[in-house]
Amino acid sequence: MTDTADRPTAANPAPPTALSACDVNRLPALIDGLVEHGFHVGERFVDAGLCQSLFSEIEALEANDALQAAGIGRGETHTLRRDIRGDAIRWLDRESLAQRRYLELMGELQREINAALYLGLFEFEAHFAHYPPGAFYRKHFDSFRGRANRVISTVLYLNSGWPADAGGEMALFDEHDTEREVGRVIPEAGTFVCFLSDRIPHEVLPTQRSRTSIAGWFRRNASLNNTLDPAR
Image (cartoon, rainbow, N blue to C red):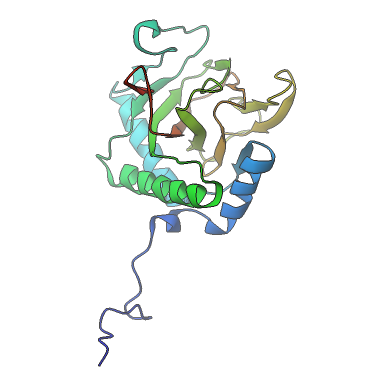
């Protein structure tokens, strides 16, 4: 006789998966966008409740001076350049339920992308990013072409009710003509952007008010001169 005690029913539903925190119906469009254009922008992609919890967390971090000024470069070349980049960050470390939910969601997304595109994505890393009024990030790539490190970049926006005149948009540019803008993303809560790290140049335009997000990267397991690449 088959034991049905643990089967999902209306009274005993199956536990939700991490993907319940996003609009799973948009996953095919996300994957198609990466293939056809090198990027995808999904409005209201991530659950509003999760975005609010993450927003409250970064607001508390900023209020308690627990964010660090972000720099450019890595290792010995790392330096602070406020004329290039003006945000402050803190790496996600799974200390809160909201962080764990978001990182679990990204883990599910990693498996979906690997199954569809065979990219060999190995891990995901992410940090909170806070841009104070007047801050920006000049045009850049997240990875160098031919270097097997960061493969897909992601951004989740956390500010709800973003005004049209507040600036702070992310501009995306054509991989072959880096002066030609191909997309501009309003930093509204729930909007999720992903793009190929070594192909899509992008910049954060000057913001007129406090702007919060989570920047993340799906990476391959790679090494350079016997050193894990890239280190944070």
